[in-house]
Length: 119
Image 1 (cartoon, rainbow, N blue to C red):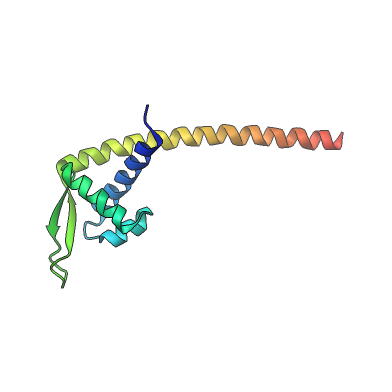
Image 2: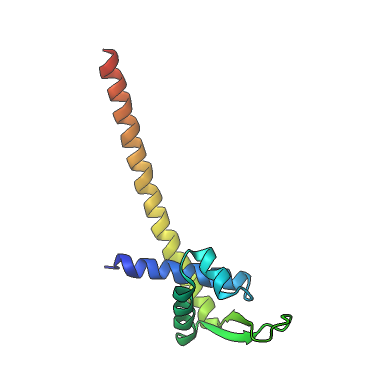
């Protein structure tokens, strides 16, 4: 069984990989803001992704500041993103179905309450 913490970590990794695939030049600060974590937390996430071989560092050629990096997804990173996408989608679909069921129950409860108040 997957813990809440590991699901959160998977979601964070998924979001970061997705953002980096679309825009490898994003800074750690921009990534942190987009994902909703601290800059220090983003530094930790990026280091973990680099250590796992999912992301590699490249120089951002167009930047005046040559210390800026581009975070490029590796083949392994693309495969992992695909896997995380499937897991994320399955989890969100299950949440959606649970919410639909809860909403239907609440609507029925509201109707019963209306009928009891009227009658």
